[in-house]
Length: 374
Image: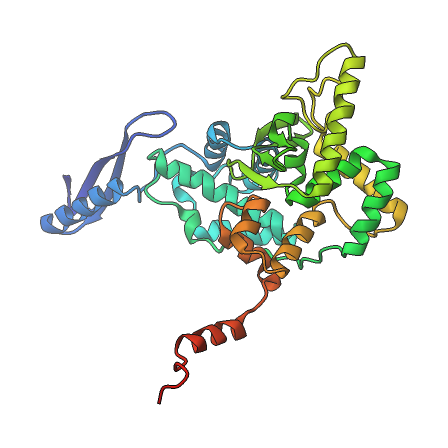
């Protein structure tokens, strides 16, 4: 604190080092007033500098996004999607802005521009998620005292109505696939038996399948991007789960195993236990790309006129049918591979049968008077 005459005081404090350069930063301010007022202002500056409320750092939003994406643990598909959002939407608008200057209003204005340009709700929400995760990492790294994106308005994404295909539709698809595309027929039976995601079915290996016990263990998934191509990774929740198979799926898998072993023998090798169930080569070394399963499904779907039924709709069919039949949500959640039962309820709440009358009858029975009592 230096007196400069005429009631003017020069205040200086040291702030945290610049996150990018590592250089110490000196913050200055000139005020007019008494010595006591200057000391009080200096104390406030010390507190504010310690809380990161004063700028001066050279780190920008673009710098943060680059370092965040380089260090984040993401699946190939998610990484490709987030990189696209960062490069196309976040950096052009916020990239040159100093990190400490970003406000919730900056974020809200960005989301508004994205909507006005015609981008869908999911894309705008993705921008918010990437930005929030990046700034949260900056807080963990000690670059910021708080996350300004937390105060921004989270872009809403309307939930699409779930319309599962009718059982007659799927019966027709299975009957047609059995004759026209036996490989796809087996794939569909496994998908309908487990409710697994497309990539999870593609990632099944023969050592995951126990036809004698009628079980399959789902512990990995296949993802596909234009840059990384086909990648085998963990499941979406990083968990494995055991799922009971239907009789039809067990029969189809048993027949497929026999055919796979014969094909490997003709190629001059033994089929390894870790071979993929759905593979593009005789050795079972390369799994089906998810896009291959989708293309084969679309070809079948168009052939029999199923409209716009997606391969993912088979997963919706399994969930809604089991919940409507009264299967407990915990069992359904495990089959679907949801991290929490609440996720299953959140998505499929409308399909959970109401049993309010049963609840009332149960309570009534608890307090019924024994027969013969007065």
